[in-house]
Length: 250
Image (cartoon, rainbow, N blue to C red; front, side, top):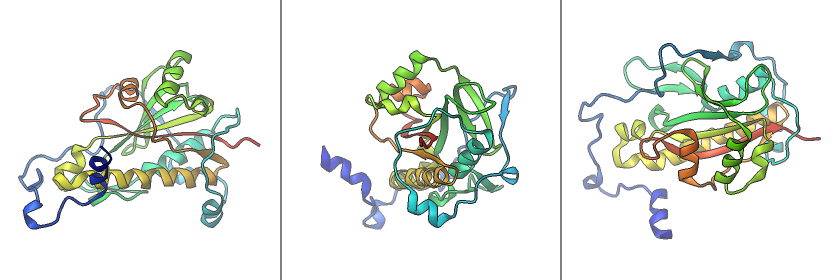
C-alpha cells in the first residue's frame, strides 16, 4: 500500500516507450479553464486587485512569521482582505486566446491550473454565510448553497474531527479537475497536480501573514464525505486540500 502511494511522487517516464499520446496531441477539444456556471447566476463582486488597500507587510517578514495557525479571533475578514486572499491563491493575470492556459499568481504545469476553489464563509463583512465557489477569470464569487450549524458539524467530521475548522472565518477547499492537466500531459499529469496544490496553499499562508490572519493546511480528511459536502462526483472532480483561515487571535 505504501509503495503504491510512493509511485505518485515519481516521474512515470523512464524511456520514450513510456510516453502516452495526450488528448492535446490527438487534437481533441481542450477542457475549459474553470467550471461553467448558469448564465443567469447572480455573481458576487469582489474588490479588484487594483483597489486593494492592505497593510505593508514585507515578503521577508511574511516568510519569517509564516506558520500554521489553528486559533482564530471572532472578528470577520473584511471584503478587501478576503478578495486579496482569493487573488493571491488563484488570481488570473492573463488568459491565452489559443490554448487553455492562464497566467496566474501561482505556477502550474504548462500554465494549466487544475483547481477549483470553494469557500465556506462564516465571517466576511458584507457577505452572507454559505458555500461559494471562486471564479478566477471574472474575479467574482458564485454562491453554491447555504451553510448551517449542522452542515458545519459535518465539515468538522469530514476533517476527521479537527474542531478548529468551525472557528475559522473562511474555509478554503480546493478540488482538482484532473482532466485539465491530463489533456496535455496524459500519464505525467498527476505528479504536477500534486505539486501545484502546494504552490497554491503556500501563497495562502504568505497572504494571510500579510493581513494579520492565519491558516493551517489540512490534508487529513475523509474523501467521500468532503466530496459529498461540496456536491462533486469524486471522480472527475474531487477534494485535494483544505485550509481554514481567520484573523490571528491576540
